[in-house]
Length: 254
Image (cartoon, rainbow, N blue to C red; front, side):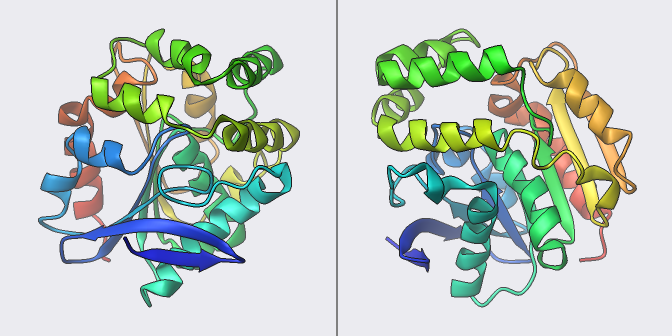
């Protein structure tokens, strides 16, 4: 397995295909394996060099239990560390949910490394405190309890269920604790963004209103609502998502 090192934290990544580099960053409590399972890798690798990254605390990357290891700036730095290990100066970026939030952090901390940002099911705004508290309680109750949050979104595959249940819940609890403390840390980012940006989300996503509002403040943005899809479906339905991704990327000079 290939790894990059980010201040002593090993970060697992995979590379697929040839062409302009495109980072794929998964959502909270998942891993890079979902990009394969949900049907993104095979079509995208025909035209792009895909860099799939297991975020800190996830998949085959290291999983520290200290909340201080999971600031949003450190999560952004982890993506940069992988690009540095591959000697890639700039790349497109596509992140889902937590991965999309990392995209907003990249816009804040390393804007010149990512001229193109695609965020799916993600906004820079903090979720309501009651929802954040519910997530933390479920995490602290264990993987089986946290699985219920996913299952509220719809039927999940046996492979995705196995990935969720295999998580290090102490690491995820540490990450979520820091996420709650930093819930407003990216709210000032949208008006400052110079990147070409695509925001895509299901109209039934719990963050839909925030994402729609965010789209009004980004200078160079395309906003795509996916009718009747919830947070999970807005990722799993790659047949509906990919045409928007490929059309958007095809319009860019990179």
